[in-house]
Image (tube, rainbow, N blue to C red; front, side, top):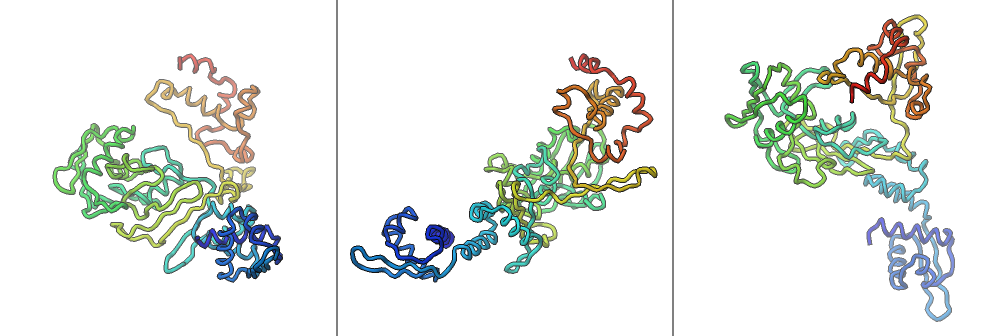
Length: 416
């Protein structure tokens, strides 16, 4: 029997006996733990060898044996909780402790960077799981950041200064306005051990070719070993920057045949995914990474939506005029972007774009009278309370919209 299972059995026995030493029988104890008399004797012997209790058996019909607890269930529960925490088994920890406040306190005490058995470990508490890490799919901000640690692309955009850097490709050149050549590093390995091949790079770029931003790629070929030629339908001097984005990152060509690839992806980046479930995301430094090895050996993201505190983000708002000098701070709540597709007739219509920009301002939404609109609306944010409006909707332009906004029927009729 495993040590964890034996600890659970002892805690259960200690709770059934209210932590008090007593005279009892083997049959009574077996009934408490719902096991056989023989198995109960084995459990008592194992617990006694651990120094948790003493069992003084008395032979003979009607005689009762003496059970004495030398260790409290609470102390053992704390020890078991510490073991689970060290093993990153958060789901079992919640089940063991039960008290969410106590679990929160234990987790917070272990957050941050630590050094254990010669390894640097970073623990982070997060409010939701990150089950989809597949490049090219709709990724949120956190997933995008993790994907950059797992995968590599031909180039890399420095997140601090925005400058373009080499990644899988160590050099590139524009031969003609529509012809680019990239020179790739040899000897790069995926996390599952296989060496990167040109077919992997070509298949990944052909996959991203289905996305609108990459649809101008006409042909991809490899004229010589570790040389990649990309032919475009139209000139694009920003192509090296485009190939450094997450949708263009390189996947193994057999990724579709690999189980649970979206949540357990395999790339060539500095970190490899070890575990990814509803309770935890764990990534380890990849020892065979072709670049500088990661300084932190292990990153653990503990997912506890029920007991974690709100994300530690901040937003500071400050106006320009004297009446708006007061600074207001609040937790960052995220945002949505409304983008117009200029290729469609409605998206290219300036009147429609200006009218929708006005309509979706929080002050406008909050003053709408229709019950159906209010039911799906949202209250004014701190921006509105501070008198701040989006930069794309200056106050002098909004006055005209307020007086004569574009009728809704005009848009719905154009949509058809």
